[in-house]
Image 1 (cartoon, rainbow, N blue to C red):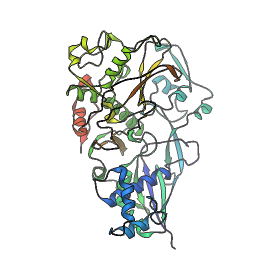
Image 2 (cartoon, one colour; image 1 turned 90 degrees about the vertical axis):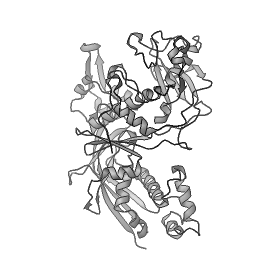
Image 3 (tube, rainbow, N blue to C red; image 1 turned 180 degrees about the vertical axis):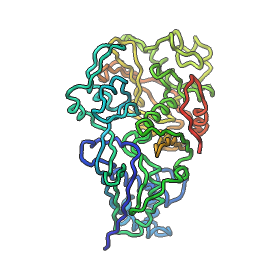
Image 4 (cartoon, helix red, strand yellow; image 1 turned 90 degrees about the horizontal axis):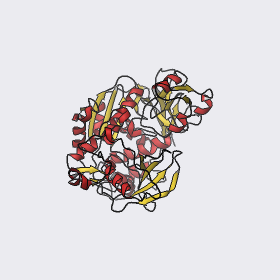
Amino acid sequence: MNMYKLEFTLKQHTPIIHFQHSQAGATLRATEVKPKLDFFIMKKLLNNPEIPDTKVREVFLEKANNPHDDNQKKWKNWLVGNGDHASLDYKMSIVGLQSKKYVIASRLSDKQQKAINHSFKFIPESAFFAEEKSIGNLFDEDGTGPQKRVDLKQEYLDLLKDITKQGIVNYDTEKQGNDVHVKIVSFNSSLLDKITNNILISFFLSENFGCRQNKGFGCYTVNEIEKVKQPCNNISSYLKESFDYVYCKNSSDGFGQALSEIQKDYKLLKAGRGRQEGYAKSKLFLYFAKKKVRWEKRWIKQEFNKTSKTDFKYDLAVNPTKTPTEPIDTNLKNDWDDNNHPHNATQKYQYIRALLGIAEQFEFQTTSPNKDKFVVQIGSENNPIQRFRSPITFKFIDGNIYLLANKVEKSDTTPLDGIVEFTFRLKDRKNKLLDKPKIQIPSPPSIPDTFDIEAFLDFAIKDTSDNATIGNYIKL
């Protein structure tokens, strides 16, 4: 039998957050790319938008083994194990040449950035929080306020090894570009013929890879196929094939600045901005406030206030002199009692932040002198909830940030119209969960059963509340 091959290169636009960053040639992993490409091809072949994503492989396998289906013989021949597995019968290898490593920080102060100077490459502000402790350990800090001194520790090279995930950008010195080389081999020539230029271009524009991919990390586009340069035009047309809504704005200062913008934009959309960033309410909060729906954050604080202070005597940290009023998410008395505030009593509570992705937990600062935090775990210990990926994805390609979104519809893969349990836990400043208090909240607020994400994004882009905007996105 003859072996057939297809070779192409990818242009890397943003770092991929890699757990094997210390290995020479660390790059995009075939173990992540191939299953996604298989799924993409199967979905294209089925060409039925009524089939939910969770059923695509199952339906494809059924059709491939159905002797009465017109595509049966060809599709079955394309599958591994004579049609026994929902995996296409080809092998993929990916080679990244020289690697540039970046420390990815959620936030580096100006003094920390100055202390680093050119000692290593870094992205100072992004949506990646997993390495905060290890990154903080790189510095010696002394004093407070304007007189605070920040120095990079002498042993920083050894300490960098403790940062288990770093950003990788591959560089091809011969081509003077951020290229990654991919080879697909198969004994089935008709299968490789199916993986056409349009399939590859569409696929890589539909996906990002690695950690924090929906926040713009791990973005690639097809550069060359069989050494033939592929034009990078009609990007918006390709994006519209995979996403229901496409928005775009310019950001020409490189991927570091773009990833920082993406972090700020998404945070403003979902959570809002804190005091240090210039306080601004969440666009999601404001959107639902107009519908007389308040988010779960205040309800959780109310429940906390009802808890016994025997196990934990401290309150949630609030500065009442700086708290905005309407539409309010707190009140100046910090009593969290809607009966004392008639405006609040007319609104219902729902778990609206779930619509933009469900995390495992979120935290509240407390008045504890030990800086203990109150942790709200999503789901009970007996019924943990699965993380739900945000329906919003960002890409950064050649100086443009793309905000991409898909409709949020009720299915077995979305959180619409669900009841989510919340469990209160206390966590000390060393991030250790304490035994008390541990409280299961009865009758939690439900997730909204409908969500028009297009209407929400159109509102969010136009809204200027608190003098905060997410930028000049244009709807394509």
